[in-house]
Image (cartoon, rainbow, N blue to C red):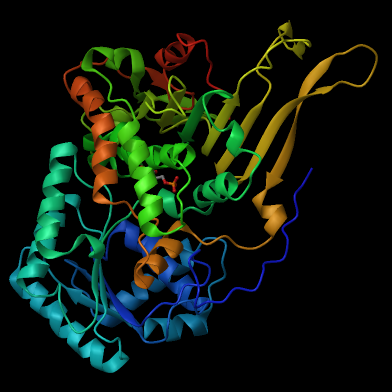
Length: 517
Ligand code: BG6
């Protein structure tokens, strides 16, 4: 069954509590770390696309800054190649690029050198006059994380945090390396910017399908009565990647899967699934509910970590006839690295809605496929009248499963039992499917398009707040601490498989199994 999208109602852009039509003021975006991967793959393609769709005003500018010496024109040429290459599902238009490129500038600089900030200020003053940007500036820190605090303090020392218009700063992940460093970073940033000017990015919150969880839960009346411990048996959140560490061995070796994905992206996804409905759909109310949920997650006791958390690391394997190296053989990785390239955890949310419902979260590199989804397993009917046909014979199972697919085939399916045609009451599972692509038939903006536009418009709803970041560190910290003192026998799963057997055992202890997405 497919669900067809209804035409959208007329919306008054002056009353836009639902972030329907962003009205973006003139501004300049300064990207520190502009020669890095994020800038090439995500930020510039997103900005070009917003320009292409006329969603940003003509009087805007982008200033890239990094240590690589380049002129404005060299920067434009480099970015042109990257944008053409990394633009997702969208055409590249030469004429539009030419007019977009007129607003691109470059300032070579070293974040350690005071003169670099003076150079940025001079460029901003010039741009303010030439492009009439009103002095509004959005700084984007896409540098190495160890520079975040230093760069923000230097912005303050050079009075770049104040000017004729507004000033905001976007901080890329990882926000801290652990709970203490995250708190310290917050304190440093608050010396220079007010919390209302700080935009901590978690690109998962900008994904259309993650936003759709809110629409699905709070725009419909039929699911809410079921959305609790009385009807939901457990929840599985999976973020599997088929790729390895792709040249990021150095960073990843220090981070690991728990820090890289669960502390931030997947905790936020869990919060979106489990939070209470906000009373109003605005930045404070939505973020209050997410934060409240994260604070309700039980902090695992150190002695319980082996029961509720599993670490894995992939080893070499042959996939589709090709030799794939193990993590320890990747460039810039220590051949004895104890890094988790796979992590699975069980969380419990100690509140009235969710008491005793396990939330299982797993993520890994070099899994059999790329897929991110959330599976909500409902309880079995109180009396099992029918047995289901399965490969291993007739069984009673929990048939009702709701799967919210974040990527790559975005959609939602609901599984239920149906009578098989023919005599007798044989039943088997079937599903009702909603598919984004076929229902809406239009291009979905990337997370970075949405989030950059929001920051320019001054809407932090989809950005994380200090209390949310701290709460999500709090729940992974005991696991990180125990793992830091554990010597794992790695590798413990071959590349191209679904992770170590200990992860299956973790679920089996609660009578559950990981589904194959
Ligand atoms: C990043 C992680 O934050 O998210 C990467 O650092 C990971 O390791 C990426 O690959 C996944 O994002 P997406 O949008 O491709 O699911």
